[in-house]
Image 1 (tube, helix red, strand yellow):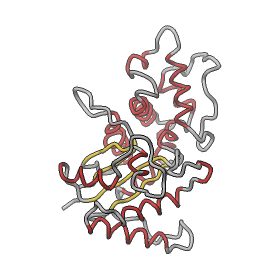
Image 2: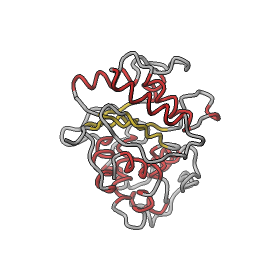
Image 3: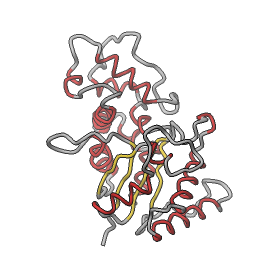
Image 4: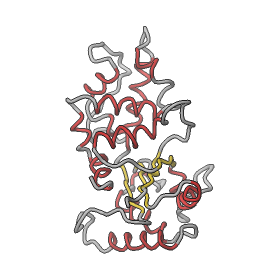
Length: 271
């Protein structure tokens, strides 16, 4: 019997449209699984960085935070049962408010440690997290692993996205322009630079300026009529549109699917 695997991922908690999936679900349970040829998730649950910080007693609590990720998982288990989970979060902004000291390895270790110490999770979940933490902690270097992690019953596996999910969308400026329907247009100076892997520490800010630029053009572009709002109030909507269009683009789709975020997702789902 195949395991029911849930995904807890940073994204909007806005209600789904009248018909179909919300944009966050389309990204993670339609666009990427189809392109990567991996299994779908049983459920996709949006989380925020507040859920992660709320688990950590050593970190200052973020405004409005009360429920830790472990508590959220227990609550979702009671209404939407699943056998294992993947948790995906952006490395930036880091849990540590001193942003310059962020480290994916440290956050991942702390993630498993906090799950193993949870007062909310049942023992089988805590035990799996404890063993995962021990295995990672005992490595001489982070990359020294014998095999990729295996999804098992009660396992919770981490996908720490570096620097954040939006890097998938800024890998190729020309592809982004084709997706937005502006490949042949002369653009104003507000159009951002620093496209490409690793060139922008904050790809979401880059996309914010890109979307603001095309929303300012006259007459309005077709995409502005298709995707409502901007990157501040419809971040997932713009992300889903760009991802879907670029995955359909043979000139860039392989670049996206070979990015470490996509490759890690494929690995975790056993693809």
